[in-house]
Image: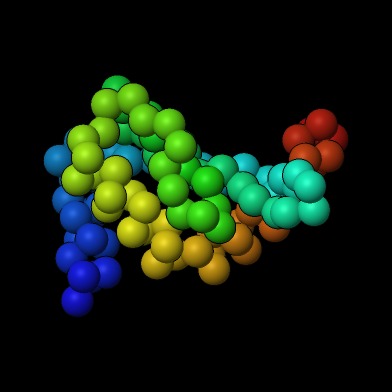
Length: 96
């Protein structure tokens, strides 16, 4: 039940602020550990999270409850976010 409430809150946040954009970085590797960054923005506020930890690591404008909702969203959607990050090929950006 908690995940559903958090998910609905993410959607409410997006509707209230007209649009909540999310982007995912390619997979990064440091010391043999893989991770990626997930960025949330509504044009005025910006938060960046790190997966697979599902923690917001920087925040400019989102409230404490909203940060918790973003972290819950990352946790719930972790497998999909990992797939998105794994599907990004940096070289493609330079080939266009």
